[in-house]
Amino acid sequence: MKFLDLAKVYIRSGAGGNGCISFRREKYIEYGGPDGGDGGAGGSVWAEAVDGLNTLIDFRYQQHFFAKNGQGGMGRQRTGKDGDDIVLRVPVGTEILDEDQETVIADMTELGQRIELAKGGNGGWGNLHFKSATNQAPRRANPGQDAVERTLWLRLKLIADVGLLGLPNAGKSTFLATTSNARPKIADYPFTTLHPNLGVVGVDNVEFVVADIPGLIEGASEGRGLGDLFLGHVERCAVLLHLIDGTSDTVAEDYQTIITELEAYGGDLADKPRITVLSKIDALDEEERTSALKELEKASGGPVMAMSSVARDGVTEVLRALRAQIDDDRIRQRPVAEAEPWRP
Image: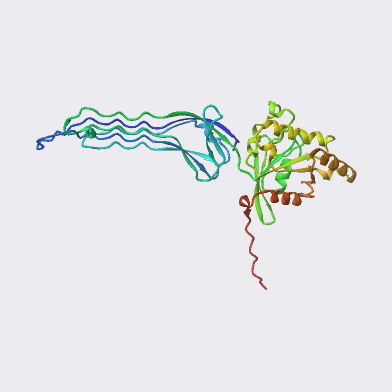
């Protein structure tokens, strides 16, 4: 399934049905009178966060969503049928924006959350409503209320507990593949990852979700490389895992490049809890590893962990450090397999 995190949709609620002008015409009724029914209400347009979706690709092939109009009223005091609602089913984590792409109408962060995007028009009154002692044969009825038409943007921000950051080929996808069942593309050239990947990671009988996004380069905030469009997918994370390639000759500069891009992106992304890790240490000897760690600790001003995803060296310690930064209410307990009964 192709990943799509931004889509434009056109919605329109249903118009209300017109009220009816009608009079009773029955042979044995001495006095007739108005009996025009009301129009039915138009359908509304709703958005609902559902399970099982992690992309907006469905909205590339269908962009127009129009609810049904209400039916007009009829004689014999019959009310018109209400128009059917229409529901846009979106992944959890979808932001619904107005046409200006800045005004947030709703943030669908919980499963089952629903919001009305365009209310259907009310049905018009039939002439029966206007009957009175001084106007016993009204010849007027109300038209139905007009439909509401809107242009909206849907922007998906993945719901994850940990976000992976780093330059291209820093080892993010290898870490995700090693620690979870996710199978991101891994190769020895930059920008192997072209869209975000999610994986469920387990450590010490708890599980949490890790998001891998395409690598950033210097000038990403100005559109270089793949830009910083995918940084929105780590905005909701509880902690960021910043990987620095240990085989690079400029680990301090590599670290600062990512920090600069986070600050240029804005928001509170640069202030989120962050764990800095020197990756690919299996390719370094003891002296090179010590030198790189010292240089990186000086640049970051804090502790730095070391890890090799391929050799699984230090991976468990990194996972436990991430676990300690994640709020307990975001952690899911992993069921412990029951031991099989002993058999002779």
